[in-house]
Length: 293
Ligand code: PXL
Image (tube, rainbow, N blue to C red; front, side):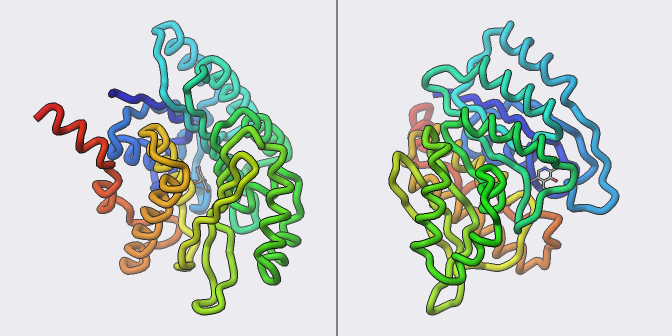
């Protein structure tokens, strides 16, 4: 069956993130990606001297045109929203196209490693919170989760040093605001007695938790959150289970990081994921191929 997803994100010339990542992953997973740019940048904002042109004033035209054409989406993904106006336009888009049976994944791109990305303000955080409340799947990293829930970041980091169970309990309590969604808090550092550190993607869904843990590979690369969200949405649109979908996304990122480390790729340039795109095809799509053989 043909599947189509709207991807609301920026187009960055460098950094292997946002729309470039979304389109590559969705296409590799057999899904048509319809890009709705929120901004066009010479490079993602981690690069010194980047230039950014907002696309917020053009977003309404996309919504109206696609609506007039009667276009339907199986999924909607939103990511980097350059301004509160871009977030408002995204909310309008979601209200227009998010019918029953349509999966809306909100990746609340706001920051990482305890820091807010360049250009975001309290108003950006507030408008992202409004979108997060509409999501079926919500994929903040730990920093973004703290920003969305008004949680002090240091407190969460201290928990990591002491007690994993206490950290998870605190996260579950704060997650109540988004109980309508399958929440996946990514990049949670967890102590591991043998190798030192793991990275946990904590799923909180319908009041239950499912930790999906990987060895900590080190480094903090551009675009990993975008790639993760795109794989997760595509796998869910193919009706793969929530935990296997998170696992698939995590494995894909781990392969890209390992390759980036081998190539000494700078963290701003993103991970070397391209050779691993063919591995994302599901066996269901292969069945689809054989139906046409
Ligand atoms: O990958 C997140 C992201 C997306 N888009 C832009 C960014 C960033 C992170 O820095 O700058 C423009």
